[in-house]
Length: 286
Image 1 (cartoon, helix red, strand yellow):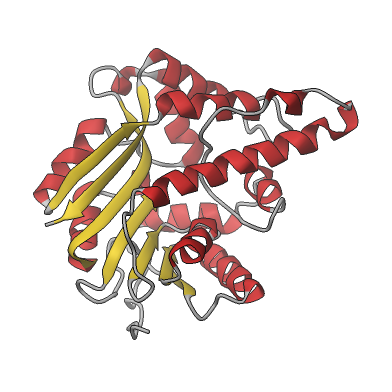
Image 2 (cartoon, rainbow, N blue to C red; image 1 turned 90 degrees about the vertical axis):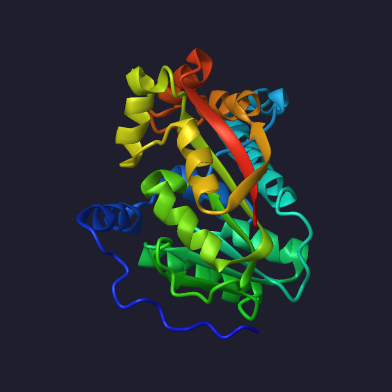
């Protein structure tokens, strides 16, 4: 196993990073916790694919439980799509989950590839929760979570075969992020992100996109910013997939659930008006 150095002395370096950390340290949103309780796999991202309409039928008293299980199935399917794009990963190699939340995707990556997976978050609460889950599952010899800043992790140069961000890039400067990822990736390694991004032409004027930003205390980047920052840092896009059409059913179903947060309508409006895209980008480190 690769030895990991101590974390940088100061993880939270700006008032904004502290505000984001405070948000996630205090977050107990049922849309994350209740879905995770279905099989103790806790995600912090959205879902992909058509939902089973039968969950809306049947006894009323179990209707919401059926919806919760289906939403969780869709979010785990989203993680599988991301992991599919990491390419071949050998058991002796290492992966980094940047912005790991409560750790569900890291657990899935270890189960699929059998390799070491490190997750990082600026939320100490999330890190503690995720490490407890890894211990409970008996995979803490391979899956580790760390209180670290994805812009300056302290991990060794060239040590990772794959790195991903799953809906976490909107909290950071993309040039800083991709410079750090490129440093950590082995030559020929793979970076994957799934993210919401704004339409360069219409997104900046969209009230729906602004409402999403406000809800999550984030800064949604325009689509073009991802490609400019990747190319500037030696990451060459190999696969670009517009996931928007397959993301919409998740939001339609979530709007009918007890865990709806009020942000469902802005997402559906932004997707349907074309001001917002749900994009997967897989890039190789050259």
